[in-house]
Length: 154
Image (cartoon, rainbow, N blue to C red; front, side):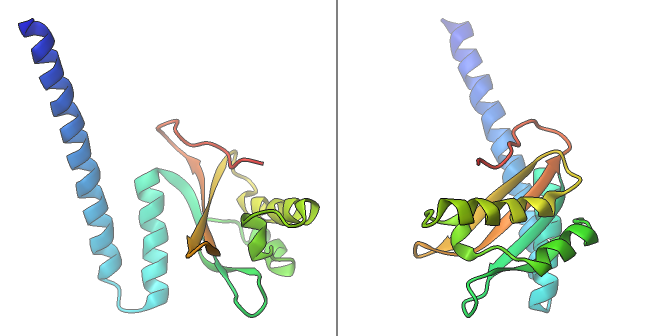
């Protein structure tokens, strides 16, 4: 009985030290972001920190343009210039990341977004919503370690 109790304590301590490590890394990231004086520099630092925290090769922030309803490139970290130019010529609609009103059009828009990850084996696309409205998306590409990274669903 003592051995089982000791194992539980060791497991709890391991979880606690892992949580503390994650917390310290998050604090470090936010400190770096908060040191920036301009919004564009802050966003770029946030992407670099996201790459560091998630061990990602690249990151991209897409922001919704309320006037056009398109997802425009807001900030980039290690995404190919060629992929960015192709996307700029035909950006995706914001509703491509929300409920599918027109599944064929939404699929085409999602494919254009996936084109931004050209050259990377995997990517993760996270819609950013505010009050049930898509206001942007964060894309992370190829994690170097960890294995938890999955391709975005179809």
